[in-house]
Structures are given as C-alpha cells and as structure tokens.
Amino acid sequence: MPQLTPIVINDVLGDSHRFTPVNIQGGVATLEVNTGVPIGNPRMTVSTSQTAQGKRKLTLKLAMPVVQDAVVGGVTRKTVVRTAYADLQFSFDQSSENSERTHILAILASLLSTSNIVSDAAQDLTGFY
Image 1 (cartoon, rainbow, N blue to C red):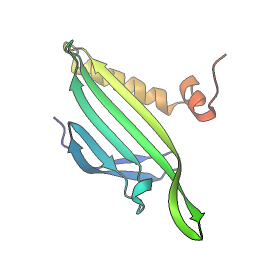
Image 2 (image 1 turned 90 degrees about the horizontal axis):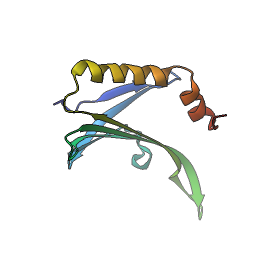
Image 3 (image 1 turned 60 degrees about the vertical axis):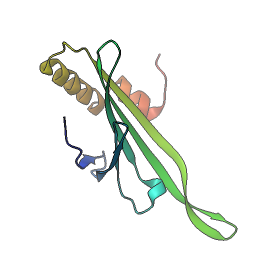
C-alpha cells in the first residue's frame, strides 16, 4: 500500500505543481496545490476499491480551477470562473500480473505525452472524422 506523500507534476510550460496531502476520508486520498486562494486550489483525489467480481480499481480525479477577480458592489473577490476536470480509472483482474499493470501505465503515459488523436481532440476540442 503506497504512503500518501506530495506529488510534483510539471506542465507543458515547465511549471511545477506540488500536490500536498490534505486528508484521507472513506478510502479517498485528497491532495491539493496551495495557491493561497483555497477556492482555486487544484485538487487531486486517488482511491482504490474492489468490485463484487473481484476486480481491483484505481480511480484518479483531477480538478484545475481558474480563478479571477470579480467586482460585486465595489468589492473585489476571487471567483472560480471555470474548472477543467480529468477522470481516469484503471480496472485490473485479480489474476493480473505486475508486468501487465506496468505495461498499461507506460502505454497510457506515452499516449498522453505524444501528439495523437487523443491529445489533439482534447487540446482542440474537436471531433473525429
């Protein structure tokens, strides 16, 4: 069982995002980037579970809010104007081997890091033809 520790992720601009553990409730670990504006903290949740059929599941969710100043009645306050979400779920049979799980992680990492129809569709928000 992995220990919940900070995770540092670099974006395409070379900026580092340090997700720090916040808590674990109901088997769901929450990590956040401290931006100084709590409503705007990027948040990641990670959980593991087992289905009734015995499959092991890993669920990762990421929320990246965009915060801007809003003036209401002459008062300026930070407001979330939109949030990008990503949900990723793995499901492994109980008889799966470590090498199989490692293999699918490597394939997914490559899929998301190269220019292909998945990244193009996500970046350009276009459909397929």
